[in-house]
Amino acid sequence: MRALVYHGPGQISWDTVPDPATQEATDAVVRVDATTVCGSDLRIVRGDLPEVKPGTVLGHEAVGEVVEVGRDVHGLLPGHEVIVPSVSACGHCQACRERRHGQCRGGGGRLLGNRIDGTQAEFVRVPFADHSVHRRPPDVPPDRALLLAEVFPAAYEVGVRNGDVGPGDTVVVVGAGPVGLATVAVARLCSPRRIIAVDLSEARLGAAVRMGADAAEVPGRMIAELSEGPGADVVVEASGEPEGFVLCTQAVRAGGRIAVIGTHGGPVTLHLESLGRKNVTISTGQVDTSSLPWLLELVRFERLPVDRLVTHTLGLDRMEHAYEIFAQGAATGALKVVLRRE
Image 1: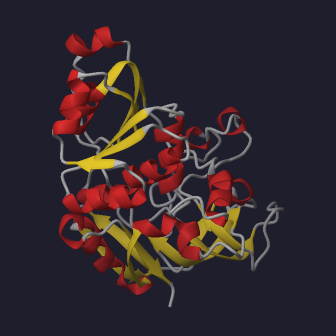
Image 2: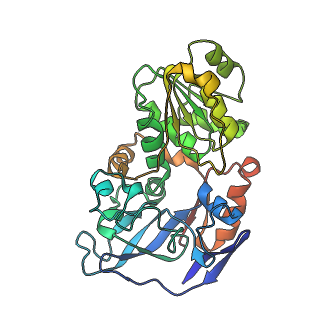
Image 3: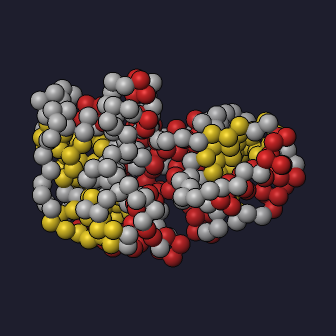
């Protein structure tokens, strides 16, 4: 088969590699019909995640068709259309029983495109298939279902749920990349008083308004007013930048919540000299994708504008070009780049 292989920092290529097969009785093999590129994939290519070894097939989000199952897989059959999420769950450890799949201690967690070959390929082996693969209803198109493999679960679980967004809240989302924009859309369902998106890109600020933000700005007047006035009830840090986190600490009200959803590759300053008196709760987290079935129902009934995140669609064999488009998002306007089997 063909797959996007990581060969070391700055080096990826669309190569011919062996077809995957079941290795454990709980595995399934899925033919990839659509996949996408994530910000963490870019971090791997930059060399920020040394645990990813050269020779690994990248990618951790996909939709496709089951073509093979192990003898201990009971909920799937060849021919089933499925969603392959970013997190694998053994289904039996304490973390999985508590639906904290990202913290799986039974051999799961962040495997695909990280510790084992991932989804940016024609086929992918999925461990713990009964607990890690979800059936795709026929009335949910593949492109919509694909955005439930990680981006919307991350927005809900790590941003909206951890931030305890509720009716009447003022919510600020710092960073209007794909996960930040998904956070705007999911937070909208919680009946907040207003949602303010903050980003340095005018194009992404426009996308935030289309996703449901009441206001969007480059850091400026509204953040200053919140900092000097009542502050926001919930601030979601979705930029992954140290300056973004500092902005969150300035915008949050006394007694408010900061939910950190952005992936930070280095240290961040925590200004306790000013923050310590504010009685602020700060949460971090790893996406579990345990909310995927609930989010799937929202998509089925058109309650989430998932389509608005897809800006580019390419053939699966144009994977290297997809990385270039996504990496230059400020110039290309790329949010989510979907790659389809042709």
